[in-house]
Length: 185
Ligand SMILES: [Zn+2]
Image (cartoon, rainbow, N blue to C red):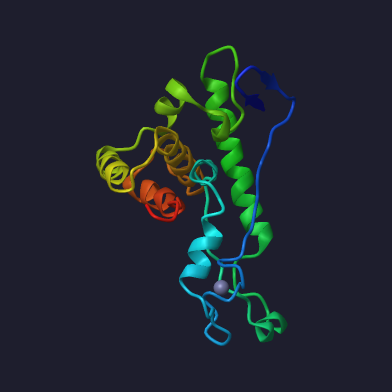
């Protein structure tokens, strides 16, 4: 991990994965129909504005999760078991390991997250329909260059999880759905 400041550039031996959670607004009841937020939407706008745009731009996956009803905690889970998801992730990682082993170069990434620049273009270039969506979304969502590349990288991983060879419009669309725009944009 590299930290660059005006006079210093320090590289730490660390691979960071940031996972963070926050309430939708200060009181936490923005979308709760029973409790409600008495100060919506200002409560949410003020609270969410405390996170800077550049920070949000560096977070690849933004997922809104509804509040859990305590009564649901007693019921059996309805989703896929974690073991099935873990198996799919392991398979996608194997695909990535094989992909990068086959590509030359001095420093070989081990997963999509480490692919950048030309290498990212090589592995994540979408088909024509995907490229058209990417171009349109870049203008409409005012994606930064960083955001653009992050969407491509996430789309490549979504394709890997689906066992797909190439990145298509559907993969791009899903990757775009995880981008969150700073309030006011
Ligand atoms: Zn509130």
